[in-house]
Amino acid sequence: MTIVDLRSDTVTQPSPAMRRVMAEAEVGDDVFSEDPSVRELEAATAELLGKPRALFVPSGTMGNQLALLTQTRPGNQVVVGHGAHIACYEAGAGAAWAGVQFAVAGQRGCFDADEFEQVLTPQSAHAPKSVLVCLENTHNHSGGRIFPERDVLAISAVARKHGLRLHLDGARLWHASAATGIEAANLAAPFDSVSVCFSKGLGAPVGSALAGDDALIREAWRFRKMLGGGMRQAGVLAAGALFALRHQRDTLVYDHEKAKSVAAILRDGGLTVVEPDTNIVMIQLTAPAHTLVEACGEQGVLFFAMGSHLARLVLHRDVSSSEAIRAAHVVVRCQRELSRPKS
Ligand SMILES: Cc1ncc(COP(=O)(O)O)c(C=O)c1O
Image (tube, rainbow, N blue to C red; front, top):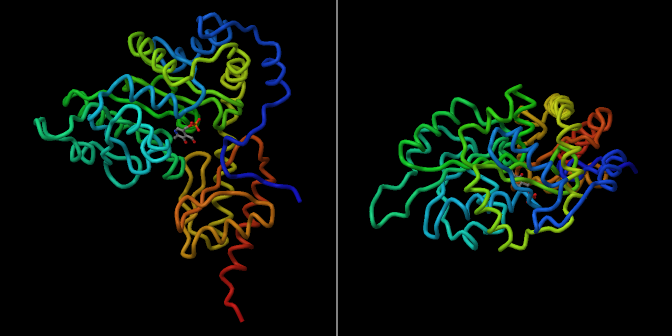
């Protein structure tokens, strides 16, 4: 049975061309700042994001956590959207390492300036101090949603008025840029820090980066060391990430097209689907999501339940259009079987 793996866009395999540049990468000890391939990746990332500097880190989680460690103090409050990765899927790291507490703005993942202002704490000796707001673009838990630019700008204006800094979890910022045609640097412009991933959709096996100004990156460098993220001949990984950045960003639009085709088939098949902005398709179910996940898994179509009645399918470069279409028909068939009254 051929497996179609739609669990995540992190399941991609490095291509032969990517493996070649990784094998041949020029490397040095990056803890001594002597790895030329890492330097090149950091410079290219900083330029694409329009920031003075970037720092290569092993994971998106570490990029986000460095953003918290560098811009907050224990006891501070950080505002996030509902289902934010930085608050919900990083094993409690924000509380454990930076010692922050999170306040959730709105209920949709993306939020607007009014929802943001409502959760800001008053300046008093009793309330935790709100110092940072984190936006996620695209927003994973709400189905790869693109954060509306007008809301980003309005939230940024409110944040500045109240003296808060802004962090962007841009694990899939490349997707937002590809779908909107807005340069990543413009999407990143309102933010003090931006984390991006090379291993989600872009197809690199490992790696993320945090971008910001020189002072922030110096601090982040020290915290990366504290967390054990100082890597030695990391250029082998950086070369794969740089290859992904240079050669595999333009093809993200095909993943968005595949997501739209899958959504259309599911909808025609009677399922309730959130129209995808990018590469993620969310199905809202009346029955528990795990039953559909298990039935499709037996037919070789893999995806996750994201909640009791919510299933997530993620399109990526290692799934062809025909495989995506076949998978969608399997989901429709399995759902029909499950809905059929038992005799
Ligand atoms: C929006 C978002 N931010 C951060 C991360 C964390 O990335 P990593 O798995 O590399 O730690 C993920 C992972 O899926 C994500 O979806």
